[in-house]
Amino acid sequence: MNTSAKGKLLRIFVDEADKCQKRPLYEKIISFAKENKMAGATALKGIMGFGYKSHMHTAKLLRLSENLPIIVEIVDTEKKINDFLPLLKEIVKEGLITVEETNVIMHRVSNGVSP
Figure 1 (cartoon, rainbow, N blue to C red):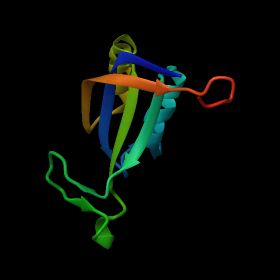
Figure 2: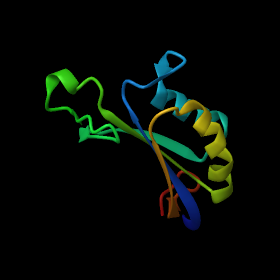
Figure 3: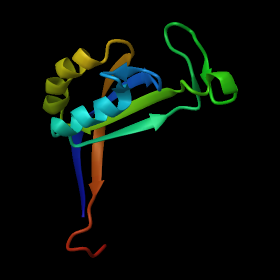
Figure 4: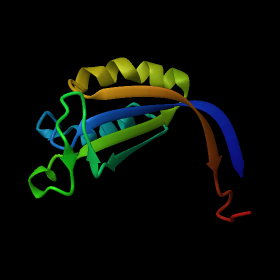
């Protein structure tokens, strides 16, 4: 069964080495999203990138490969994303946060049988 709805995509750009309470920040963000009953969250590791400080992070250079870019994506309704943002800003001290409109298309198997 396919369902479609309007939603919001929240992206948080951080570095792999960023911490929150001695824990990787991206892990904290995903756990925090789960605690707040967000619809879904995924952390993606980049292979190359730079931020506002213009420090290049790349998997090609061994000495820099320990601090690669991480993007956390969270998808939910506009209200849930808007309610989550002020809470998120308390734990993300440095990084970039973006929000964009998205069309959510979900494919779900009903009764364990695919159509």
